[in-house]
Length: 53
Image (cartoon, rainbow, N blue to C red):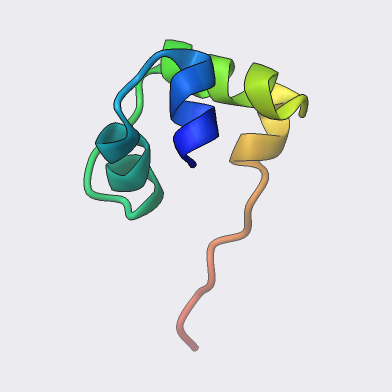
């Protein structure tokens, strides 16, 4: 994560808080993360919500 933070020019602690769900990332930060990871932006939003039965 430190390399990612450096690559997108944000604090390491910010990446950590995003990952832990403590803060929301701006769309521009999400875009920068996708670019740095070399994945399509929509991949970061491709998840399923588990439903309680």
